[in-house]
Image (cartoon, rainbow, N blue to C red; front, side):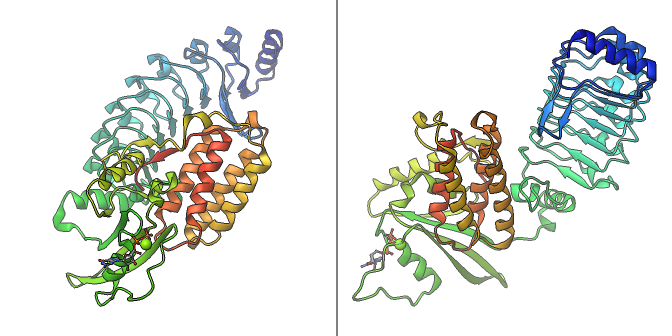
Length: 459
Ligand SMILES: Nc1nc2c(ncn2[C@@H]2O[C@H](COP(=O)(O)OP(=O)(O)OP(=O)(O)O)[C@@H](O)[C@H]2O)c(=O)[nH]1
Ligand SMILES: [Mg+2]
């Protein structure tokens, strides 16, 4: 759109008294002052999610446009996907605002003045550089949705609990370590997304049944406040036990002996070597309850396969069987390769999938990639129901990307989805035939599509 066309659009909008004006995706570095004429505007769009192109389109505004502050009838203001660094104090003038979208900008501070937008019901500030939630935010008594995900927030202020109409509080990917007790009293709160924060809550609780959803609010709060008060705590008698070691070290024999203390070594034939991974269930009584252990019996040697490292999860119990202590070093490397971060629900780590030289090779032809997808689907069909549904959906997402021309694919999305797929596979406790081929296919695909898989080290 040329400058003239833009001015015409603004003129006719003002003349016709239109209440909505959409200027998203025009690469505007600043707004023409003529917009100030459109005082009738109730909705102004300067950045949005494009449903057709399935992408965010914004503008190139580096400052919150002053002229917008004159549009005091505005109820809805979309300023997502720009490069705005400062929200001016004068935003308080827009007192009719109900929805304010400022996601995907470079904002570092939420000004106190925001508290004067008393009609605000939705405030989106995800993907910015915000470090502090000001106490003043508590005055936004009509707020129902507050999204501050992907910022650098360290503290949830106690005052937030005064937002008595809040139903959704999204804070994933921040640096929050403590949940204030007052949050338990927020009666209307339905969703609390705290995934990706260094909180002492396991990721499987912070996360819902689907990996892209937040976990159940009450479960999160009960877990957090009960573990801080051990008297209220209910212990979960369940563990994942991984037996690793060189080939013929006796791993399978140990697993059998654990399952059945009367197990005898076969006199004649030898135990066949384990291929891939066997998962066995071992139950025994403990404190009047049944303790359930999922034993993962790895095929020796296989442990060195890059893909097996994805199964080495934190918060698991390991037995390393060795005949001589020098072998221990080999396993140290395997654990390092798996990138254990040492903290529960640790920050995300990157596990290099294979040599660097292949990372930028994205010339593999699509047919080859789709073949890998098809064989992943076949293995996924054997997954337990919940995991199957989730993994097939994610495989579908990757496939959709691969079906686009190579230069239109979102490599970031592919990498993310492949990480989710691996995490789902690693979390399955029952034996799956060809699971090793499955993970090999995933890493192969990553390599051939030219992406590096970001691995969360625990799930
Ligand atoms: N004498 C003796 N033999 C053992 C013992 N444990 C295992 N074996 C034998 O050693 C061989 C290898 O044992 P496995 O338990 O299959 O070893 P593994 O570590 O599972 O081997 P892979 O699956 O190939 O990695 C088998 O023939 C076992 O019968 C032991 O404590 N004493
Ligand atoms: Mg074995």
